[in-house]
Length: 360
Image (cartoon, rainbow, N blue to C red; front, side):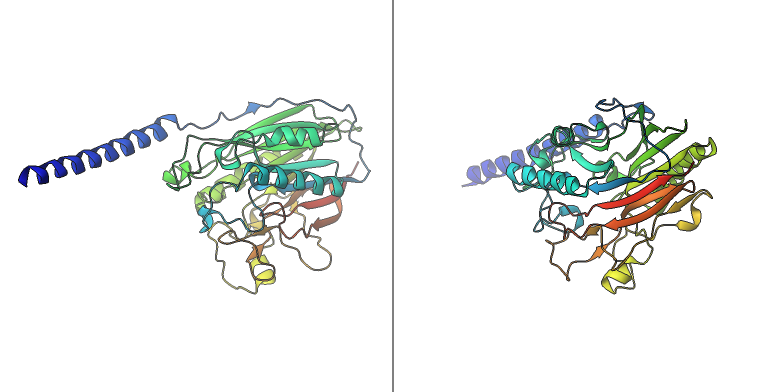
């Protein structure tokens, strides 16, 4: 009897040691393979048009976070308190990305700023979404900046988020001559393994008066966004934009800023006075450089651009806010901004579109 107990204890101990060894090896793998993508990385442009951007003419731009094709209305995300970490199927990913592409085509903008485009990721069943966008907009110049090239994330244990390669893409009916990826400050804590390797891209578009339109495509931190990190990211982005304005050029920035952009959309859209989300703090408009402004000329009823993902989306019940939008230099005149009311059919975000002209 004693020998059987000893054998059982040895087996149990061996299993425990094996599990601990696997954990140690995995943690070592995560730390050893972790790296930040180089700053000031020159991006390749796929050149499909030679059209020069005109001044004193109406131009349109749309920003849209497509949520790596996973966010059907019933999808909830584990990092927001939900249950899912991977898209339900490859067919679901293709359906959502094609739906997003069709929606953008209906809007028919000249410039597109797209966030969370997966290229080869476990979470989206390795569907190359950038290839889908390039095919869908094959007459647009385009480029992509990688903001997530991660090790395999073995979490949640029963349905791991896995390895991800993802980026932010810029598409234009007008010629793009140069594009650059800039690395944003991120947290140094353990959450850096869960949040994206945040960046923004800067794309140059020559105009017919000799100046340049600098188009910034931004996706700021959410889950690793401490107050210090949020402040540092905003300062870096907007100082960069101001430097281009000081040279006499035009600047527009669009994207997912992971802030309550109006400062009160939580209250206006949900009748909630306190901010429930640590990552969606009111945007610090008072810190903007003198020549940059937030575009807020909304007309009619205010439409959200992002939903809470702790559960699936339920109209008039799910918490909603405005975190996507545009900032422009003072030499750009905006005639219209519209948040599309798509009820989050293909993503946890809705598109935002502005019509604007570059003032000569």
